[in-house]
Length: 337
Image (cartoon, rainbow, N blue to C red; front, side):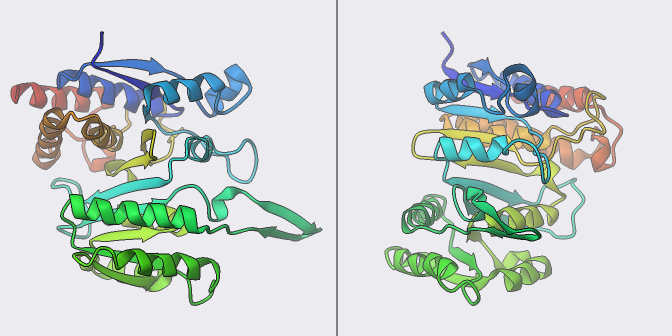
């Protein structure tokens, strides 16, 4: 019997390719996982008529952990985002995005080391929209004390556990005085319980400017859902893009680890995709499962592979296929066994 059972969601576009690469890497590191495969998004719509089938939800609730490839979210039409649906139905209230400079990956900055914590269940992403009259629409921004308190407290606990020194709350309370004002007030109250951690706040537009000028000024960022979505992608651009940063959605009972980049339909099925982001996300998953030794070995192997620069995918300036890059990484992992 496998030591772990994990729900696997290959996704669509390049999803199946990068997911298979991550599975191969984990297997090469000797982690015993039984994968329970399920579809979501467009593929699930085609097969089951819904973007998040009941069988998938049942699998995650039983296994408690899932690894997910990228899933298409249609713009301005179509079905509700499968990503948002999973977060809301499973109450995955924390979106965790570590952003770190990796040697060998072209970027504008050195020594970037940010932890971004985004509230994942409310704000404008509740999807409460309406047409007031022809040509006039509205969207409701929902901020609650419960959701704000738990994600902020989670961030402070993470900081203390991982020896992070400072947390910056990001908001727009100068304009949205009630909704973001509540978010800021709760942060200030919770921060009093953690005197060992520096707590500050920044308005989102000022934060964005300062982040691209000197990201070393920041340690951890805590944001609401919309600003967190935007700023986490901005931060990824500081270290080489979405293809080299991991993501995790975490709740009290379940966790879904995912690639945060898109499905890249233009290269889907061509064996050209860079699997690094999903592999990094799988390292977050392995640590969540207690497989720290394997996670460390994979981390060292991929960092060395990227730093050497001999076997990179095209998006990083190399000529390797997805398979060739994965093979090189696996050889490095096995050399450390």
